[in-house]
Length: 266
Image 1 (spheres, one colour):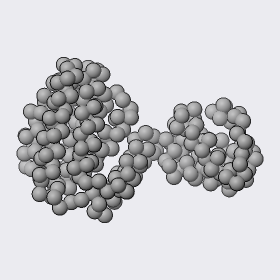
Image 2: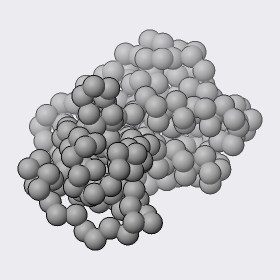
Image 3: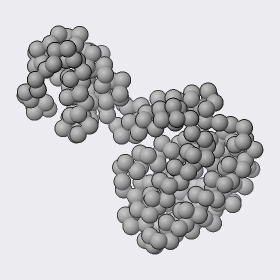
């Protein structure tokens, strides 16, 4: 924090001063020199530091808040709130909305990342991770409603990603798992019977994958993950509703926006 206050600003191009202040603060946040939770210097301090007006500083800070990197708290100041989950959700959510990929495209990318997560988990998972994976399988078996089933699926995939111990992969898999789970809820609905039938077809493959990770058998884990993803995606795409729903539907745009809002920085 002291380094932030004492740093000598770079030469300022007066025609683009707000943008330059924004970029300097943004780069400091992204590079970790201004950590999450840090209170930024006050508007007056920044104005004096850069020899600019208050409105110019406010414009720069506004840019940080729009990106989810900072939050202005009335009467307290601006704080760094950068969070990798939120940044990934914002970027991928926007890419999906603008690129208009098909359901199979999203499932394919998710499958590749989940396979990589399983490969890493087989070599990186701790005993605690192994226990969480076993518990995730039990939770899937015990799901008694459509809502609890969807949550159990989300938990299973995220547990594997966490076991990989790769922060970027965890964030990427986490968001795509949320998208995939919401698609599943749209296609299957809340019928416990339909979810149980789907789970029964995938249970042996899930169990084989978890066993391979626990045994630290990287090759088998990779193969098991590939087989599971192929089977799961085939089952999802074959559902009647999957043929009717497109990611270009306006309601999915609202869904993605809602997901990004829920993951928003705090």
